[in-house]
Length: 628
Image (cartoon, rainbow, N blue to C red; front, side, top):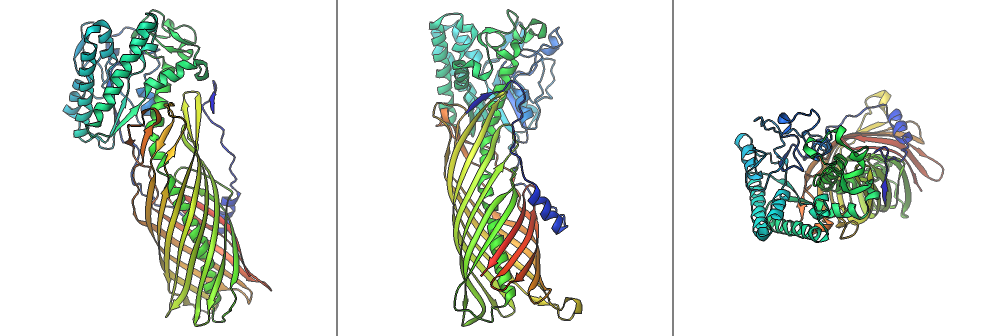
């Protein structure tokens, strides 16, 4: 589904129901602060190399007009500035006056490997730009490096048609050399946009269809050679298909909010010197091109949004196994609550018939930047006691969980509908004075996803399904201590305990959209193994012959995991796989629960609330259980 919205960028957000969370916190009357530790953050820096498509104001010191200086509809910015800001970073241009304190080294007129001049002023190639950067800087291994070059080399071809293949080949080799040098110096993430379809620029459109086709052909030739060349470097290159993006927009400009793809917003004025007084009324937003080659400010914002969507998507997808794991831990907690209450009952009186039970849980789960409320979870099972083993119990259970998680992201993965159906076994017994219990389980996972790609005011949604599974095993050991020596707590038992839970989540590969859509992406399958340790104290106090109060306070720590970066592809460049920084995830949390248990004539009823909180994850639950 595609929509163009000429007003606000803000998307409607599904109304959340805070009642569960508020009620639980009020009953618990406790605030638990988390201590989440990030495994990895997003890009720590961004650095740009390139030509006028990225130039952030290199020539500004020598221009007369205050608002000019970038190759667009000034005072708008080229894509580098809004792109950096979308990552929480900045883009500062290095300028012709000699200042190299910025992170944008791009210069209008630059070629891939040849230093040239523009009206007598020096213009460093991307090879020289990189050398200038390395003179005073060390490559940031977690930073993002952009190398967008080649358009001026193609313009050189137009002026020397017999040398087309040589010029393109040499330029590609120079750009590949720049990328390889970044790679060998430690760059892990290198963004390499391809050249847009220059045949669609007003510069070649005015020259007739034959030259338009020629421009399209040499752009494709350069792009194919570039991406084939970088494969041999071993670098992690993130491709950006601006070639296909421009073609997509040109096929239906009005859908993207453009009324003119063939004329220039700045008229006959060069975009470098173009200011608001030179621009046709409203053309900075309705025209795609500022001059015969360069995009308008709005077109640059779309390019920036496209780049953001591609470089952040793998990290967003990397949270999916964590969501499944956290939902699974919530299921384990409900099962543990059931086992705890059966242990409190003392099974010295044995029943030869199995006892059935059912537990209903309504929760609010916030995890890895997603929020949800009113999620439902159902557990049901059978308990079997052992005539030869007092205080021992074995059981089987089934669980069904459904969560609908939303994110307020303007662009990116913003909706995850999660379903889990599982089966498991559990066993509890006393070993001397120690209470032991353990469980094993398997569940199938179904996720329905929506990734929203917003290009300025245009939005496209990509729905996809992913199937998976979760295996887990848990073990808990506690030491009950009756407080018989304290009169006011004569019917109270506290149990310090240690626990461990191992999880394995597997998710299938994801493929969005169609193969000819540059906005759609693919993501490889994921395997996520975790081991959590728990240290806590649970307590139970008999208030009367039929009424019991119980509670628990614990700290949970992730002891081990194999969270990995997700391998991704852009659909139109499916032979170019890449990775991006994985998401930052919680690895510990504090939790508490409080409940009442009452023996009725024909069944036992339990009800309570629980709350767990980490740095980014939070789970609040209200549960009711009936045991027949």
